[in-house]
Length: 127
Image (cartoon, rainbow, N blue to C red):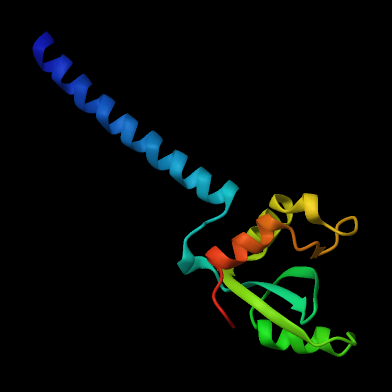
C-alpha cells in the first residue's frame, strides 16, 4: 500500500507544480501586460523635426494621422523616424526607460539621446 501512495504522491506533486506554473504565467500576463506582438493593436511612433531636435515618443493606431495632427501646430516639417508594434503600456515602459532624456515633467518629448537613437535604429520600421 505504501508503495502505491508514494507513486500517487509523485504524480500529485507534478500536477501541483504544473498548476502553480500555469497560475504564475497568468499573473505575469495580467500584471505585466501581454507582450506578444499579436496583442498589440497600434504603434509606438518616434517623431522628430527634419532638422533634428526633440523626439516625440507616442502611441497611436494610425501614426500617419497623428503626424498630420502634430504638423498643423509645428512650423518645422515633422517626420516619423520609425515605429514599433505596441500598446499604451509599452509606450509608458519606453517613457520610463528613456526618462533621463525627457524634456519636461511627464511630457512625451525627449532629447535625441544615444539610447533612443540606437533603439530606433535597432527596433523600428519605417512608416
